[in-house]
Every structure is written in structure tokens, then in C-alpha cells.
Image (cartoon, rainbow, N blue to C red; front, side):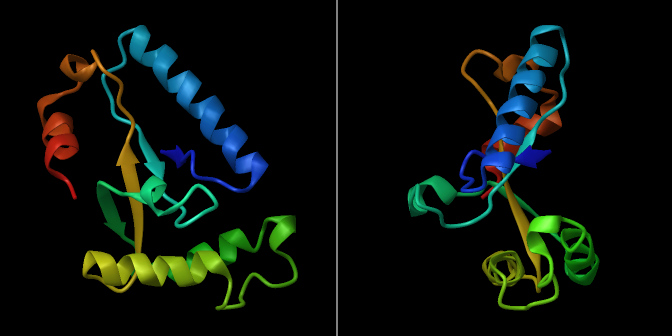
Length: 129
């Protein structure tokens, strides 16, 4: 699980690229697990780049997320500001997913590798919306 490619923050984009590269190297060496990329929301890349395939209901964890985000120096002194985009976005994704708060993800995949995934992972990739 990592940040997605729809990032405006260069550190998050760099992390997404490094994790994706490491993931594909692992797949090339036989790893059969899946990778999820977090969708941050609507960015300069446009709405079409922010689709999602599955979600995790984090309704009981939003305050913990706020606490952890507050550990990043770039968020200080406002980590508990409910107008921050990550806070609002978690509530918006929750409404879209039918729960209070959600994180949304896309499955990382590339052509020719679908046969490497276990059956449950393929089912999730092909049938999540």
C-alpha cells in the first residue's frame, strides 16, 4: 500500500514511484501479492485521474489519522484543523462509499501479470468499484 501517482506533494510522488518500482521488482521475482495505491482526491491532474476501485472504512480511525498526520512537520501547527484537505476528503470518500469515513484505493496492475495474482485478488481487481 502506498501513495498513488495523483500527488501534488513531491515527497509523496517520489514515495509512490519508489514503492511501485520495488513492487514490480518483487513481482518479477515471483511475489504474488497485490499492491494498492491510495487516491488522494482531485488534483491538478484532473478528476479522471482520481477513480478508485476499492475502499477501507476507517470510520473509527479518523482522529488517529489526524494525530499521525500531525507528526509531519509540514502539517504543523494545524494538524487538527478540520478544514485541511485530507480530513475533508476522508469524509467525502466515506459518503461516496456508504460509510462515515473512508480511504479509497486502486489496484496496481500491468498487462501480462494477471495470471500471477491469487484468485481472490483477481476477483477484487475485476469486481471492485
